[in-house]
Image 1 (spheres, rainbow, N blue to C red):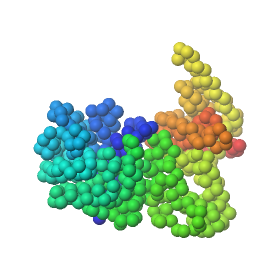
Image 2 (tube, rainbow, N blue to C red):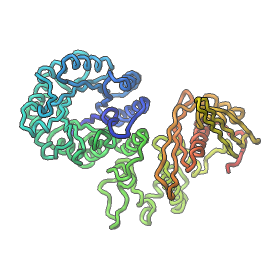
Image 3 (cartoon, rainbow, N blue to C red):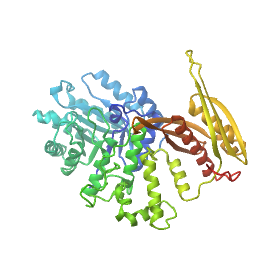
Image 4 (cartoon, rainbow, N blue to C red):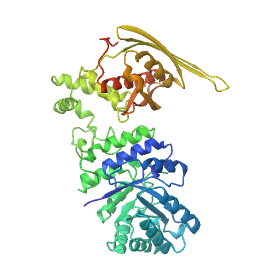
Length: 513
């Protein structure tokens, strides 16, 4: 059975407390979702300034078969509805999702909803876009004994909607209600339109509701990566996709994409500036840890979702798997001891707070070092930063670095807007004379996050830096209890990755300290 994914991470996901994505990060998430096989990616309403930027930039993206969705709402104000629909169509998205409440108990149901819904669906079709219908409060309406929820399904089917999502807006429905609602909607649709489910987690059963809907014939599941969303969140598409494919035998994502679902979960968490949930089903670091009572096998193979059994790789029974991991990393596995050393190093790095989902370049540097293939382009001897604050806003940040490179000691100083900018300019000024290839290196973004305290009240900070050179983009990270040290780690990794990827020869055999 084929089940299609309707992802709302870029819109509904941003309404959760503390979750916010920059426009560029939303574009990156959209690309990852498209690669994994999402059918629709809800991106918001183009009439809103922040969403308008996203739709404008998204026109340059190649999302393959995925359709970017603009949102429009049917209310009790025809003029407002017309303006919303016109703005949604101007956004240039391949699909438009019409949302309407079908529960009169909330007092927000549009008059003559069925006819207006049909007119809007047909207008979207005439504009060459795919119309989808999101029926808000669907299960609450059925619970109240109202006929409108089913009548709206019939109207959407007759008008030619691409799919109808049954939305549990309040999040209070239970699996039995969802099963009955999906069955009623399918009977009303008569096979003319696919039925989908959009569940929320206010009752703690959003994933269960999504699965219940599929067992009764729903072929579209909506939700967000990591379950982000307002109040208690939405259905977590990580768990939904894994359950459907591994437990129910459905086809949900692109072939082989399920193995990248853990990476997607951590990637989105990093961009949302949130620590990945260790106990998240399938994607959490503890999802497949050995339990207190021993060695019972995990309910699925961790590698099927791109995760791993943390403890089983390092305990006494994990020797063969440890060696396999070392070989997969391309490291010299000279027996059991070497494999254990590799895994201990990786585990220690992660315990210190490093996450490589957005810092792949730093991860590659670590692997090269463990494999004995790291190139000694330069060696840091010392650095100093000066940050002067002034009430008039004309402050000063200056960085000084001392490096061993090219058989000599080089001092360089530079000022910048903040310590990262100043350190980056000082590093490049010191190195460009020996490595002119660095002239096109630029830092395009940076972010930092305080981590959980490691000792007493001393907490570490992780700094992630994104760099570019006109051809490629890459991420690096530094972790330290000193913010400036973390900045310097990330910046030096960025420089080293640039030189390594361009296959630049080492100017001197400077030894690293």
